[in-house]
Image 1 (cartoon, rainbow, N blue to C red):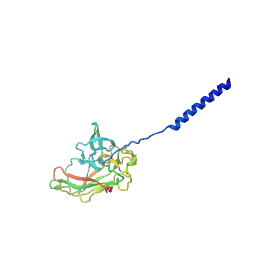
Image 2 (image 1 turned 45 degrees about the horizontal axis):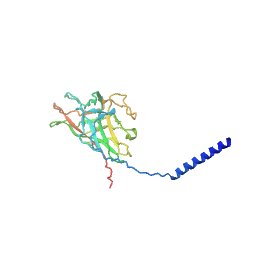
Image 3 (image 1 turned 60 degrees about the horizontal axis):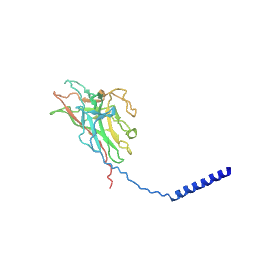
Image 4 (image 1 turned 60 degrees about the vertical axis):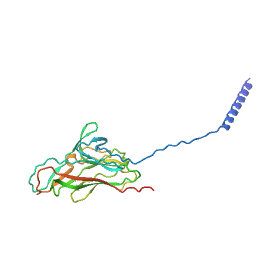
Length: 263
């Protein structure tokens, strides 16, 4: 009885194995490859001003910030306007200095914030060339009609770089301290001339003085000065000054060598 049972089991197993082998030997497969495509083009839209201490937030420029109306793959996006307040005309044997007020602005949700004066730029060029330098130039001295503050200078200090970009994209270094004069030409404020690959890609701000002494950026750079102390106008002694509002032009530029165009 045991033998018959065992023999039946062996026979059944042989038949099943033979059937499976026959199916495997005759099986065939067919393939068809589908395509996936994506097309990129350079973004030439404008870039809104952002909070230099929380660059993921957009700010309302109001009258405090001049925004570039022109888009492009590499641009100076925005710059805060310098307000040196209302001063009394006096006679002094020494030069007079005046601090630019901190920037009073608002986030998109209406929250009021105080920030240092700043400049913002964006590089979103195609390819791996993201070298550039940011420069500032006193292109018009403070003037009121035919009257001017001859020899006046503007000094920027306590600069901090910030961005919402990943750390791998951040350029090295910090914004430089510079003094702008009417005959001094443009001064280099930030240097990204030796970067490689995607270093420098994205939107960045240089804020001169911060809202508090303990402000840091994502790179853990620590504030070195306050917003109301970091942009200073110096007016020489001995000028004959008339009443009225004097206005200067500070021209900011981002200078670069365009990448070669592929044939």
